[in-house]
Amino acid sequence: MIAAKAEPSSMSSPKHHITFFRQSGWMMLATTLGGAMMYACHMPASRMPKEEYGAFTTLLYVIGQMGIPAVGLQGVFMQQAAAALNPEHERELAGVMRGVLRGTFLLWLIMAAAVFLLRDQIGHALGISNPAALWIAVLTGLVFLWRPVVLGVLQGRQNFLWCGWTAILEGAVRLGGVFLIVGLLKGYAAGALTAVLAGSCATLMIGGWFSRDCFRGEAVPMIWPAWLARVVPLTLGLGVSTFMLGADMIFVRHFFPPAQTGYYAAAGIIGRAVFYFTAPLTAVMFPKVARSTALGEESNALKLTLVLTALAGGGAAFMCTLFPSLPLRVVYDKSFLEIASPLVPWFTWCMLPLTLSTVLINNLMARSRFAAVPWLLAVALGYGLTLYFRHDTFKTVIQTIGTFGLVLFAVCVWFSFHKTKPRISSPVV
Image (cartoon, rainbow, N blue to C red; front, side, top):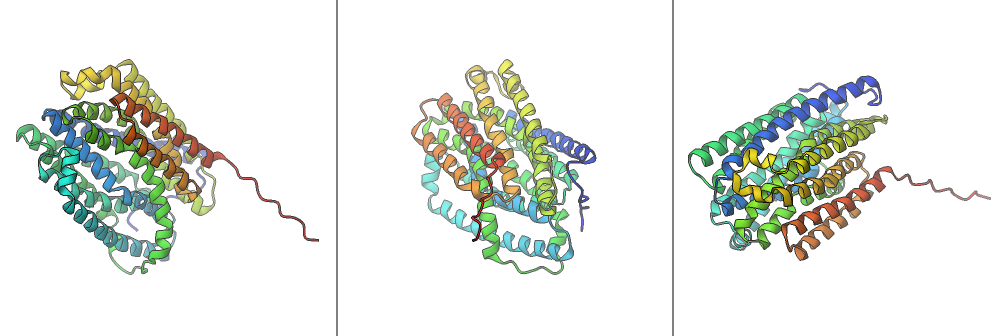
């Protein structure tokens, strides 16, 4: 195997606490660097007309929604790669990986055909003036479907060194592309999305290289019914976070004047930074929980991740409350400062419950506790319907995010920590 496997010893030992903090620290550093470069992309991007900048950010979240069918894939491959303890398991992993890449390509073809048939309606609803931007977003969607497969293997094998480097390199390629295409060549949304595509392709190639053993040698044929029974609830559970993270921007773009959506997008970028800043902790936690579950061991990974996420996320939200204009001044021009006080603190605090919920959802899915999935979906459905019918102001939309984030957190806490009492059978007389 290419990446060394972690030793199957308990995560509750002091040695593994140190390992967890070291790996989490590296992932947070790498993701912070990558995220900072992705955030810096908005410096030249925000110089576009406000309606073009709004279109760019909206299509970023559309790409994220296109990737929802593959959200569970990263978790599944993390689980399977973490539990691949012998050559037979490795052959099963290779067979599943090859089959899923083919299957997701067919799924993407169906989505691309649907976009082609509805291209005029989609362009009108999202205010997209250049059709090329939509098609670049569709092509990027294919990369977003494939990327979780190779990254899941990378994380499952606990190759956190290159998990971190993929984040850094993706940010560097995206930043360089946006500065070149938008900053120097004066491109608009389509040009900025081309840079996003290039950065995503870099991540895909790195992950593919470190999982290249799965493309060679023998592979156990994939059994689709059994695999789908496992991946569908995982995809639905993890997809709830992805949907709630980005759906608001799509609704805002549809219901508000295009020129105003650029301001909301700027506040959203800062608010969602709380989520992305703490995501590396969850990325380290998931394979450790999956592996400890496979080995029947105890693990403190959830408690450590939840505490660190609350401290880091709460600290970031507190700083944005004290200095709401500071993150805007770093990237945006003065025209964006009018939304600092009314929107930025609200956005950061309302994103915190969703961020904590994501930690708990990943723990539930890593342990295959799928009983929570219908309830998670009910929260997401209520969230979408509320956004559709209740969107009077930007603040109303943000408060909806916070309200349903709290509801989601309560559901996650119940299923994570509620202990079901064992059923006592009657004695046989």
